[in-house]
Length: 385
Ligand code: KG4
Ligand code: ZN
Image (cartoon, rainbow, N blue to C red; front, side):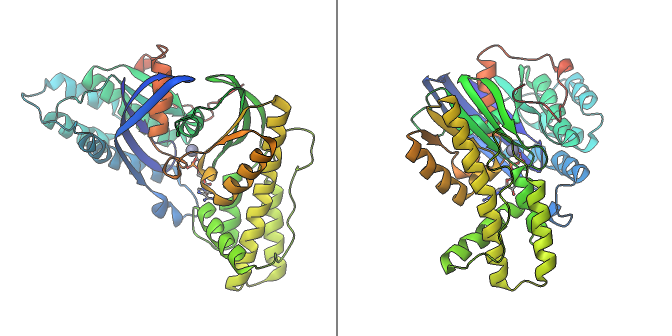
């Protein structure tokens, strides 16, 4: 099956064309034919976080060029042989009535290009920022109409899990415990069957990525803060810098599998107030302690979840899974416990369209198509009840 996938849930505009076959546990494989992504991070940095209406506007402006680039890479950007019926263009304009700039660009694209060789269009339905999700969804509906292809909705969190689970040759054995750590989510789920998720625990307040980002902001580091903290923390380890302060490890010994990171951010604020101006080495030491605190909690709870569930695999996904220290710490703990562990390839750790193609493929293979009229953005779409 060939899937064209679209992701716009936050500040990445991404489109991919991929080919997938097989089933999880019996030879699922996929090949990315074209994959284009534009990050808006630099634009949002001036606000210290993602500004939803700016994200929406940027998605509107960039989806058509990103689509064209993904199709070009896949060798599927074909010129039209004859003119398009004007009723098709009108149809696109109706769907994209609220995204007039996108409607104009797509109209132009449709007049110039023939349909690519695909079987369906997949798009992120949620969770995410609703104004941003709607742009991708309306774009997907317009493409489905233009090319006469079925539409399949994808859950962003399921995408993160699948990007990690199907990266290598080897497929995770079930039951698997999955840690999803991103800017908006921190969840532990158990999969006793493929595509069946049961929630074991989640954050009661801030997500782990949010804690990285907010702590970084307090330190005057640019958005997104996770990679910045991680870079400084690695320098602190190289230099052997001792922590300036001991930060708490919130809920690390609690008997449940929940998390709480807002107290950690508050502790960072207090420590900074107490300390005053930070030297470059102070910043490094501070970053190291922040990263250690977050990673300690994530690793302890993930191993506790895996042991409780008798998991044979641990699957880590979401933007924070790009963190090298988290990978090291979790890999060592999993090895000690004799549990296989899976991480996404670095390029698929943060948001991308390949993960949406994977989720879309598995649902499409089960007939999980949706009538475009029934597809709505769901900012709080859960993965598991
Ligand atoms: O999955 P993602 O790209 O977007 C959401 O779905 O939220 O995750 C973004 C989050 C941000 O909070 C970012 O700071 C964090 O992932 N992140 C990292 C690293 N790379 C990205 N956090 C820690 N270390 C990293 N290397
Ligand atoms: Zn994400």
